[in-house]
Image 1: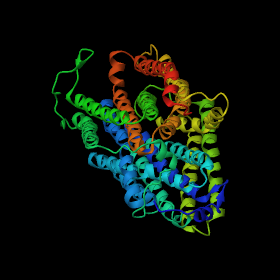
Image 2: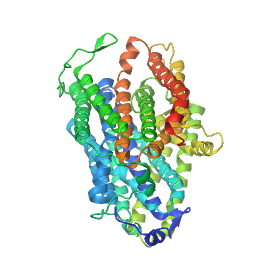
Image 3: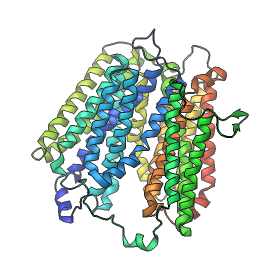
Image 4: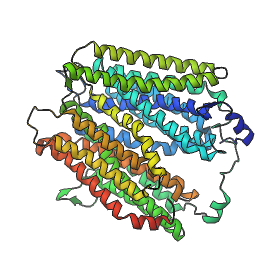
Length: 593
């Protein structure tokens, strides 16, 4: 990136909001609108694809849960792989700021395409979202890192503030896009996501004067800065020809599998051979050709990682082995946690009693109003503080933000008035998805203080606690839906408690992962290991959607309780296993805490 001098850095920090440079809050709102659009679309997709074609107010496409899960799983998996490429392009060619703008504009086109509601435009829109996320996701956080280059002690606080923007955007995106889609029609929900993505892009672009050289186009001939400590501790380990061949081969196979899964199910066209070149079976069932080739791709990637790890010294090698072990448990966590985007949406729609009357309806409306207005009021206060500091320098950006917030306030007040004046209440399917963001905001400070106290558990124990909590959340759903008669629906209390436990598990595990990758991995290996980490999350997301698509089949063959019991046993067993491995992992980490 462009070199930012200490003097320029000090100038940048003169304009402060809540003790941080105003530019941080520009990024806060940019990320907020991006997450608004992303989660607003995400909460609709499975519901829209599987909704009945006839007999409902706003028909969907009537897809099977399996086909919808295949498409969503591929989309979610690719979202975690394209940022690897987007980060490299930004770092080498166009800079962080241009990458963010380019990514946001491409995502805006994606949301606009999906609002048209044709099959071709759906696929085109999802493709735009995948590519746009690849440019946007890694580079907006890189701008923060560059901003705090000379004040690393304030970086944790900056990322905490930024993370609140992530959750605020997710909260309001799922709430409002979901509400419009279920009350007015699907195009309204998809379209609203695109509108705020475009406005968020515009306010970021108009804030250019605030950033100076931060995140600018990279200077030619500038070498990556490596500290003397890194030069001393880690010898160079260049990629060999075999390493490059393994990267290309595993990437092509993995990409073909991700694309082939929905194409073969929805379009009945196989991009990979139907039969594997040798007969494989699992539990007596033959493994399909696409899964067999996917396993080969995964094996090639493991050979690559093991080969590179083996060429380092013992301490470095042990630490990277610890990262691989954590990555394995990350896959298990996400294949359970990400049911929130597939099976839990279908469960909330079809099996949860969402109708309230009388005092119950009034109580819900009051709670919903408080849940909505209080956080929106707090974020609006932050906007006013930003206006006071920056309106003379970036007036246009501030005006766009004001328009955004007037729009949000208008939608919120319209929604609340409509619900309060409507008598009985049918809670929207998407409303339950906002609970994750709400619980994160409510409990994040508690976990932050816990990690800073003398009772701070080790990384392995944090993983163990997180996995067990996710399992307990599904255990509550299994118990609540046990022996459920045909046509009878479950109390919403079970789903609310499940989201609570899932969020507590997320707070234990999710923020820990990337932090330990950066602590344990040498500089020359960090790009590959971050790629492996995102690959683990991508695999978890893909498996989650595929398993979520099996909910109807398992419900028919066994029971809904059996489906949730699977996601109870797997993470609890994994959590206990990683806790047992705690002494080994501590030894492998060689003092890294």
